[in-house]
Image (tube, rainbow, N blue to C red):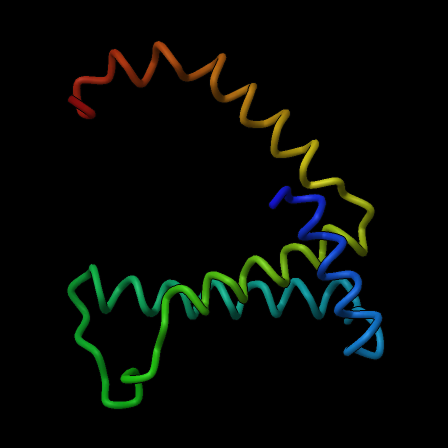
Length: 108
């Protein structure tokens, strides 16, 4: 599914199930909260922290999906076409970083 389709799907969800978008500052706080939940899982699963009993039901896929949902909300409400922005950024990175990464001794 293209990113633009995801943006439309989220917009339709908001129109059908939500009352309206939260304002941009609220969504930014929500995004920060969701990224924090991802960080918590990563630090426990792949880092040195141990899981707590309250962490038994955590799911990385669900938390990453929450991040994506709020990110798509922010893009929609600020008029950002994430598909175009992502494609442009990926092209820029491909041109800028191709040789740099292939010659990076740390990655070999």
